[in-house]
Image 1 (cartoon, helix red, strand yellow):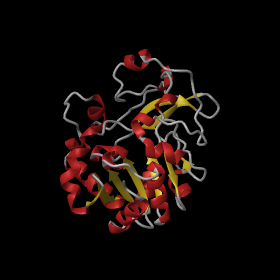
Image 2: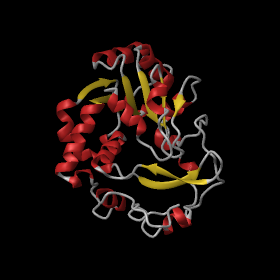
Image 3: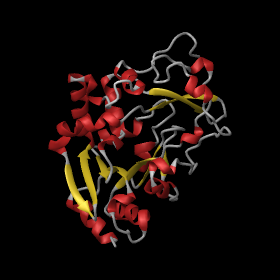
Image 4: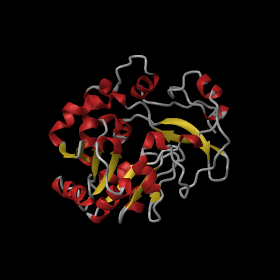
Length: 278
């Protein structure tokens, strides 16, 4: 069994204490029971003076795409997939909601989102949530159309990206690097706080992010906690390296499927609007 003291020791060993840390996690990666589960992990980081941020995406907020909010080059093709998708009853997202796509996000974000002191960004589909003394500063700039604001703030604060037993393609911050290169985030749709259809900026394909492993190796720190491999990257350096790599080779972010519409449209620059955008 893994106990809190072991986790705190690992946090300090790789110098994450007192830092802003974006965590992408797999509880299964530990290979052992953690005494207290995901809550113990969160409490360990907080007791080490950290502010932690996690993805808290909610796919169930997506709605049918309005005709006047359909850009070209949007990884949507002819939009037939979205027209035929079985949408549930419309949901109106607020930052106070605890709804999350747990199967994709994991139990640690699910647990953090239910803590009283947590803060949540305001993108209905790709929100980030945080807890700790810098939580509000990290996530409260996030809106439906400024999806990567939390990563901009993590970058500015020289925080840390921690991959807790998950692959590099889980590192959402690379989408922020794509934005800095000039790629516009893809558009999907959700109701705004007044229940009206609105566009939401979202991420694209991330499976090609494994291609950055070699260029990121010099800044990577690793530690084992149980069977979980923690890979730690300084956020500013990580983004700067990925930006430079994409400037030198735009295809470095492409996944192994040459027909991937999300990768192809992202590399072309992302969505472009015509006169039907109101």
